[in-house]
Image (cartoon, rainbow, N blue to C red; front, side, top):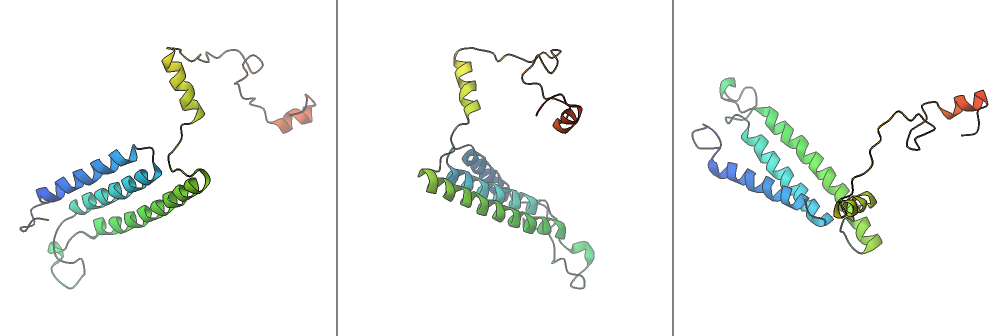
Length: 160
């Protein structure tokens, strides 16, 4: 906060922008290590942004000063909660990265099969066929049978 308590300084606002920007750029990478670093930077940038949203002042303890000059305690509590959540997510991503490195020797996130099919169709300018509906459950193999298997078995229509 600035010295006179009017609002956040320009340096802190720029620091929030740099942290969030670098965090988002790292999140878009394929390596789990870079994704982890992006989560950490993004979390720190958002924590600083929440801190800048609070009112500056004396400590929020009743009896130490006038209540109209106390700082807002809600952003501080939100930041503490955010730190715990970011720590848990960091621990989870570390475990996923370690498991990926242990199994494949690499921490790069591979493409899904569906992603590869979409790329191939886009290269051929092929459009996926759309389901127009109206065929009924027997005419469309993608149609889910709305009737549970137990009910069909009780009626004797066939095995599920």
